[in-house]
Amino acid sequence: MFQLVRRSLCMRCLCVLFFLILITAAVLCYNYYANRDALWNIISQQCLPHHAMGEGPAPCARVDEKQGIVVYKDRNGPLQHLLIPSIKITGIESPLLLSSATPNYFEQAWQARHFMSEKYGAPVPDSDIALTVNSPLGRTQYQLHIHISCLLPLVKNQLVNQRDTISNQWQSFGLLLGHHYQAKRVTAAQLHHEGAFRILAQGIQGTDQQMGHYGLAMAALGDGDFVLLATKRRLSDLNRASAEEIQDHSCKILPVPP
Image (tube, rainbow, N blue to C red; front, side, top):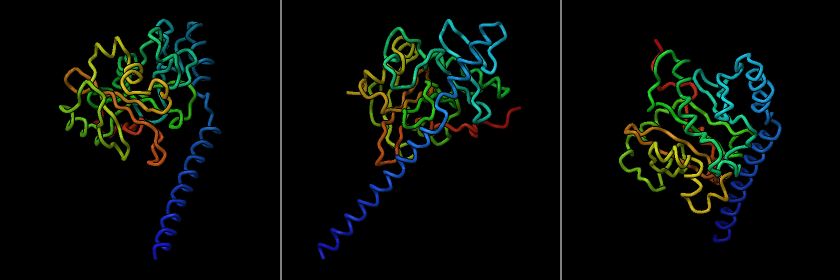
C-alpha cells in the first residue's frame, strides 16, 4: 500500500515537472521567434531620424533627446503608452539602470501619463494609472519599455484596502493574480532622487545581482506617496515576473469618455 502511494506521488510530481518544462519551453520559443527588436527599430529607424530632420516625432508621440526618452503609443489598448530610452538598453536586467547617471525613467514615465488623458479626452485619475516593467522571461522586446496604462480594478481595490499597512520598508503584499508581490511606500522625493530601479536593487537583499528575475510596478497611493510592487519569477507558480499583469489595457476602470 505504501509503495502504491509513493508511486502515485512520484507520478504526480513528474507530471507537474513535465508541465512546467512545457510552459517554460513555450515561453522561451515565443520570445525567441518574436521580433525582439521591433520597438528599437521603430525608435532608431523612424522616431529619432524624423525628429532630427525636423519632421516631428512620428510614429512616436514624443521624442526628447535631451532627457533621453521617447513616448510611443502602444497598439494594445486605447490609452496605453510606452516610455522608452532613446539609447539601447535591453531591460530591467541592464546594469545601466543602477547608475545615478542614467535618466530616471520611472519618474519620466509618470510625468508622461498625460498622454493617456489626451487620448481619453478627459483627465485620467492618478489612482487609476500604473507603470510596469516586465522581467526578460515576461516580455518579448529587448529594449527597455515602461508600460503606462490603467490599473486592474481588483488591484486598485487591494491597494486601497491595504494602503495604510504599506510601509517604507519592503514587505510582503500578499498575492496579486495568484503571484506573490512585495511592496514599499516611497515619496515623490525618493522617487526623484533614487529612482525606482535603484530602490528595488538596494532594498531587497541580493536583488542588485538578480534584477532580471524581477518585474516592477508603480502606482499612486492617493496621499502624495507611491507604492512600488515587485514580483520575482518563480516557474513553480507559473510566475514569469510580468508585472504588466496588474494592468488592464482596455481601461475598463474608466467610464465611457465624454
